[in-house]
Image (tube, rainbow, N blue to C red; front, side, top):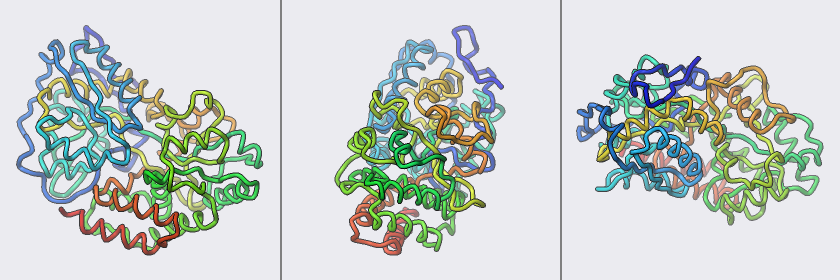
Length: 457
């Protein structure tokens, strides 16, 4: 299996891409950074972009790449690799705090000076408002429809029926983060953790062992609402990945008001009541939580593999990661991911042709290597059946964990990507839950009310 490679002598739009998405999205549209169906796409969305990139490859241009702060190092490395292939095209990053990204991006795309490249997590909203470019011409020119599995492209297609069909608005290659449970190897050894927990019951046993040993079980940052990673993992685990995706993608009839969603939230509430989080969780941000975790003040940190770029370099080799455990032995393991090598071109971009070259570059072996180094495993390298073990290196654990989720068709997406309003409400409710100011049922009711009020705007 071969990925595309770029060279000075190679035709820039006709080369084999390889099917690097097959494993990660088998049977689902989960490897996407998109949200769900709503109203029909706006007629303001440009339909006449021809993707004529031949001249752009040899012309001076400047692109702005909008990214969340947590992925800025990866985005810079990707941009550097692209500029090495296309030295006349300069790429400048524009970053935003992770918890503000979803809220800020629509306003930027609608401005007179939008970023050229971005990943709209609310893709249906971006299409509806005419903020992103129809990429059908690029799919044809770069042979994406022949070279990339249709299920991958479907995640970037939007029509009146929602996600999965219609014109293409997101393109590129495929790699994504693994969101799971990081563990401090020294602390794990101290409490006698001798195998990876594979069920929620086994995970709870490890939490209790840490608590009994006077160690904080889970180091969390909730000033920025990032306990949401754990909440989303629980939702997917109890609801099932497809039901959670239906909510995120705003599929007609989808609802968060289910016994399974409330059961998942009740688990989080119980862990808070049992003292399984650091006492200052609501007061600290993600950087502070990384410091506590690296200093050995907690056993687990629940986040995505992008944090490998942010943890102290002196901590390398001293931590590992495993997928979030399944509900029980007969249930799949579930995780959120998105396609870090797929993005959109702003409809108001003045450099669409150069931006299209960037999209095509993202399906090359060079781009996949950059993603893997940043902690975003590629489906091309995934090996099923191996599982995650405590003695593996972090890189081996990331790839094996990603393959485990892929084999279970367990990829879903973040609830806060459903709408910007849900994103804001979720942070508020998570802070209230950890502080004991609300309970599981009330939290789900509040999120559902916000979801219903905002999904059809």
